[in-house]
Every structure is written in C-alpha cells, then in structure tokens.
Image (cartoon, rainbow, N blue to C red; front, top):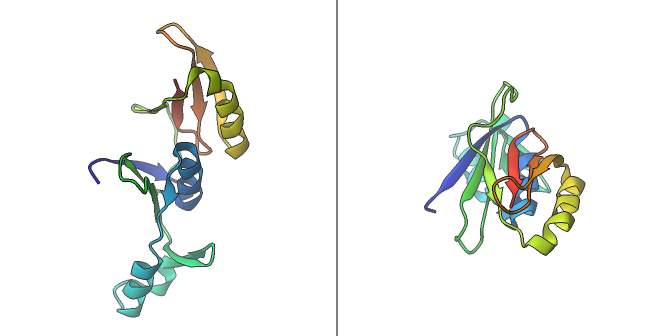
Length: 138
C-alpha cells in the first residue's frame, strides 16, 4: 500500500461497506487477526464484534483495492460528529455518459446529491456520503 485515506467515523463498518461499493474495492477481512489477538490476550473480547459472521475490530474498518492500485480507505470511530465542510475531499472520475446513473446508484447506497456545477470544466456532481463527507463525481 502506498497511500491510505483515513476517515473519522461514527460507524466505521458501515462507511467501509459504502465506500467499497463506491470505488469497487473490497471490505478487508481482519477476522483471523482479531481472533488471534483475543486468543493471545492482547485484545479484550469487548473490542471484537461480529460483522457478516466474521470477527472484526469494534472501532476500525477498512476497504482496499484487491489489485492494489487504488488507495486504501481506513475508517476509525471517533466520538464527535462532522461539523463543517471537509478541508480535503475525494474526486471520483466517471465517464460523462455514466454520471447521472452513478449519482442515482450512489443515492441508493445512502449518498446525497448537494449540487451540480460546470464552472471549471466538465459537469461535476457534489455529493455527501452517509456521514456527511463531501466528495465529487467528475
């Protein structure tokens, strides 16, 4: 992995599942590590949860590109919610003839369309993920 993008999150596992679907990556399976850490006494059982029948870290989740070409997305639970506009956001590139369909697909996954603009070139859709983080479809 060369680049990781880390998100503060209220629901890291839900965010990992959402973003995996957005970018076509896979939610990482940490079950063997989690189970080993608990078995070795290096992690309390209360820090383990079960997601889709597999052990997982309670407070973190990640999704990554199986081919290793795209950045890894890492989600960590934090107590505070998002309060202002992101200082950094993701740009997701979509073929022009697929943008409207992609907006519809992402809305079906829980994203929200905020606005559209074309003041800097191609039509851009500004969206929010389920926790309010802004991103753009270019």
